Image 1 (tube, helix red, strand yellow):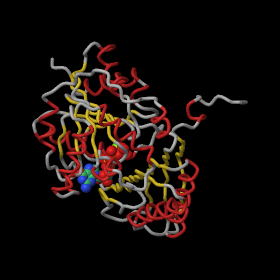
Image 2 (cartoon, protein in one colour):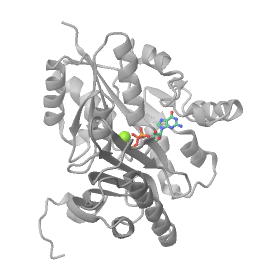
Image 3 (tube, helix red, strand yellow):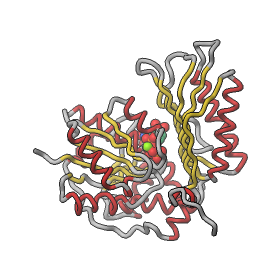
Length: 370
Ligand SMILES: Nc1nc2c(ncn2[C@@H]2O[C@H](COP(=O)(O)OP(=O)(O)OP(=O)(O)O)[C@@H](O)[C@H]2O)c(=O)[nH]1
Ligand SMILES: [Mg+2]
């Protein structure tokens, strides 16, 4: 029997990893190849990307709680399960601030599972807008984050410039030239996961190749890495909004308001949010999913509700360049404002919020006396 193919998709927050994995899975489905997504994130639960991928019709499992780099047995279990259920190709992403999966996932899989899986080229997805950071431009993100963007490309076997629908031909050339200058030995391809342009060509490329899976020195754990991670925080919340008098509340407006109020509060406190996402499921396949890729950009609605509801359960995920407290306050305030404006009761059933380098996150809940 053919080995199950496995590919890690890395890339900065909001680069389009999830959208790309869905697009690749569809491209493979058109060829009669069954693909699955193992959606990875740091939070314990309530991950927008997992819900969104599953709603998009691709077999999806979530592997949460930490990066796949640090839960090898669990990762292998999940891969075996998906393979057992018929997946011929499995994609998994890593949290958008992460590096290190080449060592911790690919090389570990080779060493410990003895080539049970065929490792496809390690992919890094890049957003042209974020690439401006490496062109010396200010896009309102801390300079320290440049390290991550570049290290992610340095780790990859294949760099995919995504979102080509957002740039013109000269900008495309400029982006490709920059990537080739920074990483002259790495193949670069361009596509739009959203429009589909170039997706089949990228799929043709990676499906026919394997990764060398050799260690590369990219500064994992370095001071530059720590400095970038210290600036980032994660926030996940699931809220149940309900309204007993009106069965047709316009939740598109409610959720759009949460984006706008969060944006305003973070602007006022000087923070930014490289990726704020909200997912909410309606009935019969109806759902809402939108993303904000920073306080200076418009909200992108991947899908709006087709009808009104009396109540919805919304999952809010923020990956912010701001302190965890500031992000929490901004979103709490936005949710409270939405509830008040639309006379909704808002009940929170899940909440977690942490700075990437917060001591209490890593010490397993032990006490300190310093
Ligand atoms: N215009 C355009 N937008 C895209 C494309 N690919 C993704 N997006 C949008 O960019 C936003 C982020 O995409 P995701 O796929 O969620 O990005 P991600 O890398 O998985 O984000 P994180 O998991 O949070 O790091 C969404 O609003 C997508 O619809 C593309 O090719 N073109
Ligand atoms: Mg994602």
